[in-house]
Image 1 (cartoon, one colour):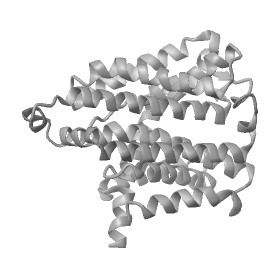
Image 2 (cartoon, helix red, strand yellow; image 1 turned 120 degrees about the horizontal axis):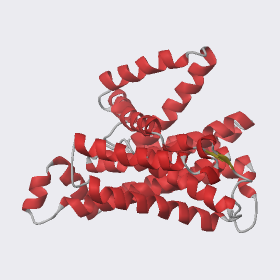
Image 3 (cartoon, rainbow, N blue to C red; image 1 turned 30 degrees about the vertical axis):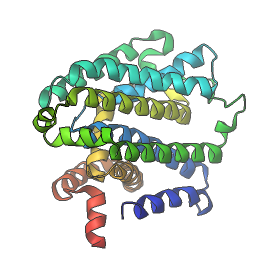
Image 4 (cartoon, rainbow, N blue to C red; image 1 turned 120 degrees about the vertical axis):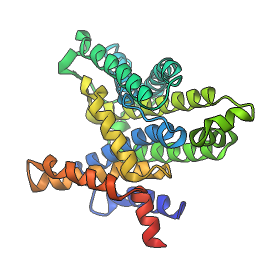
Length: 306
């Protein structure tokens, strides 16, 4: 089950352009879903892997997007330059803020990450050189070795899919390593980890920094997908959306974050076609899902299969 379901979903995403979803709006929706799945995976690592619930995670997503803005304004559009800068900027923010926040736990950690996220949000809103509250429209999508194949919807679709698979497999390998085992042990019982001579703090900080870098990658892709970046990318509400995706999918497996992101995006799109007041329906559905799907979508699918 742990291997069949991801292979099935990734296979469907790969075949989607040839299964009647090759239209412009459908390709845009699929690309957005895969980008949000990468962002949700980046949040799953500290939440599901280390037990650190953050409400400021969107700040790292937004910093990755604003790295694209700053370089675009300087007429630097090469993805082989822009993407590493976006990843590094978000990872450095995660490292600096995590060094403070991870010394706490529980509600204190949530509030500190929320505070750092809001600081980043208001900083982005004050950047008048990059549009301030109104946001910034990119001159165009990033180039790859001078070529503009990211402008092609099909090429961008497979780029997002390829990076999603790489991030997913990377997180699974990380969790299976000695580092991942210590991280999960510290989530369950940090005192026992300390009793065997290991400090949970550096492991959590490294995981938080890696999560920030992955969020920066998602920000790079999101900026290119929308060709527009605004301070709303960093808002705490977006952090809440990502957290809902992780919880809905299931904390027991990183693939839950992928399922949660795709499910919420599909639900938003379906309800949006039914009524302009779709959020009135959407909210209670999420509450019911949290109350009754304790294992998330991954747990539900596993139980039905069993």
